[in-house]
Length: 613
Image (cartoon, rainbow, N blue to C red; front, side):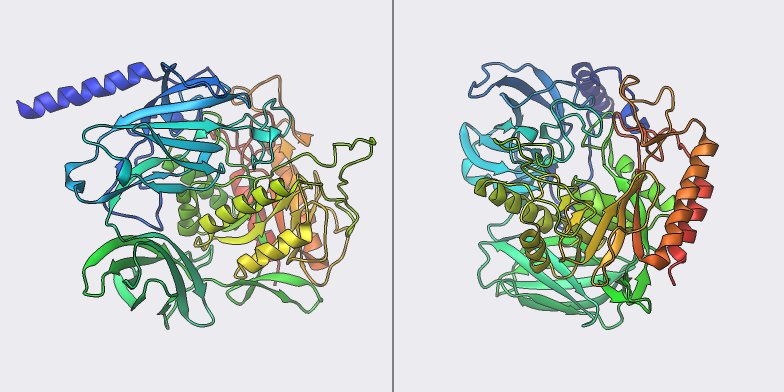
């Protein structure tokens, strides 16, 4: 009888949730969006490299309101499904906020009784853009930046019973100097729907007063060891134990002081690559000097070394684990027709990477967007090289003019130092460095990330040499592509050209850096019933049939292959999926139709990759 009553309660709760939420609009939807359960949204622990056993997911239905700047809501407009941005269909709202209004969130939650005596952390995967966190009437934290996670210890502000949580969000999008990638208040062409508010998982977890706040892991292949640096709270003179395991068997361990760099020796090291994506499980235990356990987290790592090497033809090539590598992959925007910035599920997030591997690619360029930590986990686990872009910011530039009707900046992608970088204010520059550092910190320990890309095509590009040098100094373990298809300098590790639709020779030769074709392709094929907006569609070239689109892709791939002996060491094909008005994906925006012959695509991709000897 008791079990039957509980079952009825669960069914009633589910029915209530479904009654309060349904997708907004009538646009195309993915298969994962079609089966979305608002009672169980993104249930996976969101931070695989710093995972605690005990936590509580706060995803689900929250109250929301959209109000003019400075106006506090006295009542809420309805329910929003977190973690989907308010403009998305899966949020259940589908409304634009804009730069003259604020978005308010509200919900209550209770602290489990088992957490008594513990501190409680409130974690946000990402909120776009400025988030003010208000708990039980007190504004306790403000975070700026739409792509990096943040956390706050809410213990001093807790009360008995239910906790009242409000999050106020302001997002000026491209009307400010903030990073926003391809978001635009008036989307058209290559610019997409704006994304406002919470767009990744929100959760709470208990910790002791002394705990691990973050960690950074750097593989040292030459030294046969792992370097680890912990950031801790209230943990002065504490100790740390680190253990590495492979396939369930302990392979290495060490102890040290938490405030010092930790080195774990791994003599019989198995290396990571797309062909063999070996991951080591990591356990980290923070203890007092008398051995009392203060914090315990699970993580993972991998060992790989990426650098460059000059070959017999005086051309620099990518080198991974001592071997020359040709990197070939799609431009991956990471957008979804039903969730916009947010994939409908972890399964969906994994799907795009699995298809990329099935198509025979070994690399992904994550284009002017940053993904949740679980995306990088799947890139690490499935095995793919990642080039990580900085989302473009302060985007005006070569299309703007100054007061004298002269170009305020000039885009010159075919000349060394021929362009003029965008003039940006000191505040704008400081904001760029703040957000870029947050993103680099977030991605630092993911082994799949092998290249940093600070700028794309002159979009807000400024002080290129200084930004390149800063990026390289902040993370010397990876390569830096200063400006993909942008204004070129004689610095960094990579010279990156763009050419649409088909590959062309380098316009400049550089025997000091790796030369790559950072964008090409854009073969457009329209598929009825699977388009975002039939009035807004385009591709760099338009081809009607699957067979002809496949043949065109193969033709471009062979042209690229012929150019490898002349200097190219990587190619980035545009793109993984259609995105809003762009119809040039290898699959449709809803991921339901593969627009080319997958077997032929895989065969030619593998041929291109393996042609570099």
